[in-house]
Length: 583
Image 1 (tube, helix red, strand yellow):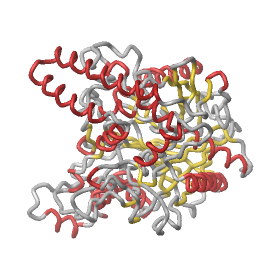
Image 2 (spheres, helix red, strand yellow):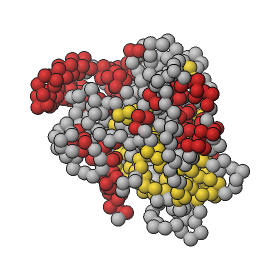
Image 3 (cartoon, rainbow, N blue to C red):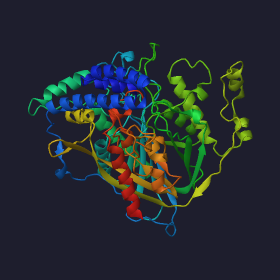
């Protein structure tokens, strides 16, 4: 999510004028008076902001759909493989199936229809991101995997969207169950690319002014339902399409081998541009490749990096780039490149809070014209890198388009050749062994802004209440071992320090001046653990609780769209519980 879009939400909720004016004062004081005075001023500001939002929450009654924690019933949840194996079962072998489908409806550009992009709404695009142009596609990609042990099939799916709520994921699981897939499923895991230029799946970027104030009015009228932010008819259709794609992946399963490769890329491909306190920056690309035993079938490549797909949907001064263009952003072009290389493409984003893709090395000082061409260049380069992790420089150079390279680089001091000084990495074959465990977590909602969003029911979040003032959301965390590759599955945009360790987990590097007090995820599971982010939910930013502040806009804007200062602790403890269960 982007800063401008989040400020808009504050405006809509009648607090941004207060918020913004005090921020300027706080920033100036911070510069003039030093760290101690800064913290004192920010703490005062946070109290003002929190107080204003809490007051606003207090005067708006709870929705009739807010449930009691004591009434929570677990439905459409998969806990994973009951038994974790240390080695492959007798006669075990990999099986994998793949499918993808478009989620773009036929009537998307018809007059009278309402489809909005999820991710940005700013003054630059006239506070209106209703879709006016389709550049490429919005897709679901799915793989169904079995290790042949008889412990069921694992589904990993990924949707081009800003975020997919757990309640909607459970709808997909329900529709999938109704299709009678013919196999036992141990888990159905659905994540988001976090693309900022696909149809809004969460309801925060639609006709927001009208719906917010309309829902405030409806809150005072008994039995008058709130208006959802998302296009509900489309969302239900999309859930059916997703379930159908997953079933197609299951039907497509065939035997083969699996390999894994990881390479650390140039850090300039990634940009930690707005969370200065988080000092980690993971520039690894991880790649799984499934090769069918039948050589006539297409192999499947699953790629994991950590970078916001956020370029296409941001409006610019160019009238053609008004922020109303649907695009899968760099992920689409990464997939196109990999598919042209002879593979099915699967993508899973990583720990992306504050991490964006750095376009300098891919734009190369070339006039890209329209903004989406920057996504084309980055996605194409990432696709080529994924295809060539194990190739030598000579092998890459032999296939390179030197005419284009020479034309673009001539007289261009900014031009960079992505495979210059290239060193290949080794690929290892993975034994047929897939363990997975998932756990429900109860996340306290301590951010009053998100309490308000829950009360107004713009989104698909299911809100629970305990006592008079305590609100919660239930989500999922998970841990998997794919042929020995360790994977942490987290339900939102994770600050990378929480994954890898870093400055904001320390007393010296955090806003509150105290240690996080819990281990990083890699300390829990191991130094080679990778992250599948926005997996099985999209609860917003997951910020270290010891570095949480609602009073800083500059590089702490993530707190606005976070469930609060307890979210990170709940996620970490959930993963620690899984580790303890597994011994």
